[in-house]
Amino acid sequence: MAAAPIIVAIDGPAAAGKGTIARRLAAHFNLAYLDTGSLYRQVGFLVLEAGGDPSEGEDAVAAARAIFGRSFEDQRLRTQAVADAAARVAAIPEVRAALIEAQRRFGTTPPLLPDGKPPKGVVVDGRDIGTVIFPEAGIKLFITASPEERARRRHQELMDRGISANFGEVLEEVRARDELDATRPVSPLKQASDAHLLDTTDLSIEAAFEAARDIVAATV
Image (cartoon, rainbow, N blue to C red; front, side, top):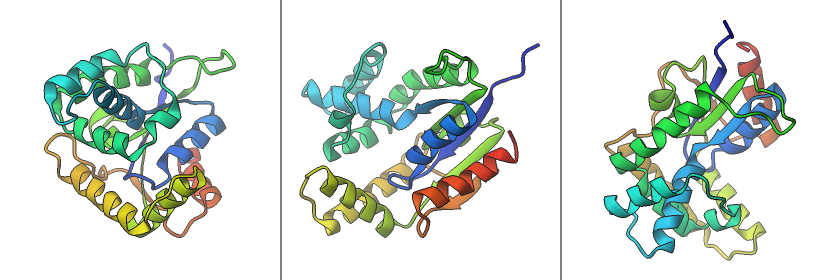
């Protein structure tokens, strides 16, 4: 009988570095990678594109069912408006239900790697991976950083893309997103009891990756 795929579940708030770390872990350990946050961004984007309301269940559920099989340009998903819409659609139980099955299927039957070889398992990042999607995951990380540092990173990202932004406003947006994620009634963001905490506030991305790599290597 084939061994069950390795599942590395990574959770954390926005701009903590979890996406970058997750992608690097996947490449390092030959694992498939899924950014579940992008799924909710895609739903939010489709709702906005159709002129709908991200807080309206019917609009959001219809969008959730429409994302599969479509291709999305990453830059169109990276606006603050889409991020805000993603946070709102993620709070709708029917939207989460529509996406949960696809996420779990990815973990149990991961796709082939770009080189055509089967992966040893998966790295999945989001906000409820270790608590709801894969509570049985063998490796769990909760990656965080202070709101101020995360706002600094987001502000720098916007500036690098040529988008004018006020740091104070970005910080307010980060704190508002944190509040929404932590207090939503469905699958709120929280650290799983058996997750390794990795605070990246004072770490370079290289140092943060190395710390995460060492945690995973101890189990893989």
